Amino acid sequence: MFLSYHLTGAHRSQFVLNSKPSQLILCNQDDLQYQARILPGVSRTFAMTIPVLPHSLSPVVANAYLLCRIADTIEDDIFLDATQKSRFHQHFISVVEGRSDARAFSSELGPLLSEETLPDERSLIENSSKIIRITNGFSIREQQALQSCIKTMCTGMPEFQRIKSLAGLKDLEQLYEYCYIVAGVVGEMLTELFCIHCAELEKKRNEMMELAVAFGKGLQMTNILKDMWNDRELGACWAPRSVFSKNKAEMKVLDQYQNSQAYLDGMNKLISIACGNVRQGLEYTCEIPTQELGIRRFCVWALSFAVLTLRKIHANPSYTSAEQVKISRRTAEAATFASNIVLGSNKALRLVFDSFASKLQLTSKDID
Image (cartoon, rainbow, N blue to C red; front, top):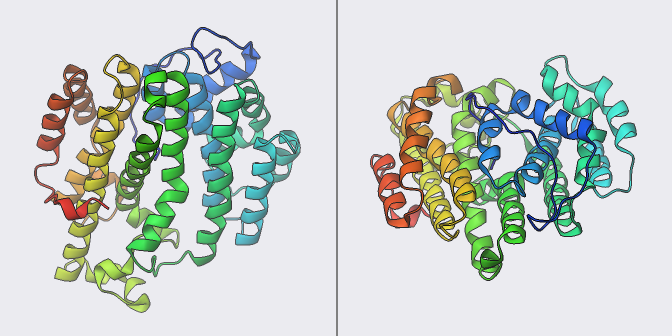
């Protein structure tokens, strides 16, 4: 669900929190300063969007993102084999749940990381004990939300690592399962944190949880499409071959079919499904009380970036790298400006979204 773009933005100093905005828990300031410093290094996007959340939410959401990023670093490392990744994912679950020492985890994993690992990602692994100490300072309910997310994510990721190949996933059902494991659970976790912060949201928690999964699915599908050719260079493909009407052998050489009608139809289908789920994410946002402008802004910015990325992919289906379909800084700034103007009106938000998505051939059957 954490959709990444190369954007910049200032971030507040992070400090404290509990389940109630008025109640503060004292945390080690060095740890909090490290969390604030490393965040823009691993995601400029979230260094910009997380600080717009209420003060009681921004530190825990930043911490949650960094925990997920540690799990992603394990999954993405090219030097670790599937068995090692599974073992480190299980070890990380134990660390987050407080059953294992974070320093032992980082000292074992750090030296095994690929030379391709970005310096800030390596730093995050090496300093995971600081992130975990912050996690341990949150309320019990907040900790449980983070632990549940990481457990589902780190249990499910190894299953997909075992079947990872250029042949892609089997079908849409398998794609949805993958999207839930890496993004739907993040939507559920964020919803739990939002409910802790806002009593009004707690009253409609169940319906919010359903929309949260679609929200996460839409953002992750956008990521998969944006990064498809970069991932294929690394030997992975998360697109479903059934959509392209290809068998395993044909999917392994998908680049040879980029000009075919089957490829274009498949891309349009995936774009439309992704957009449909992003649209459900907008309905999720509209359920958030209008006085919670920080939470609404956090959600709307992510949705805006996603739908504008889908527009670029739709306009250039023969793209060969994420760089070619990445939205520009100017486009991102224009989108945030437009969404900020209409943030307090559900009707206006829907109109702005529909204008962004007007060329994506969205139909009701594409909202899965």
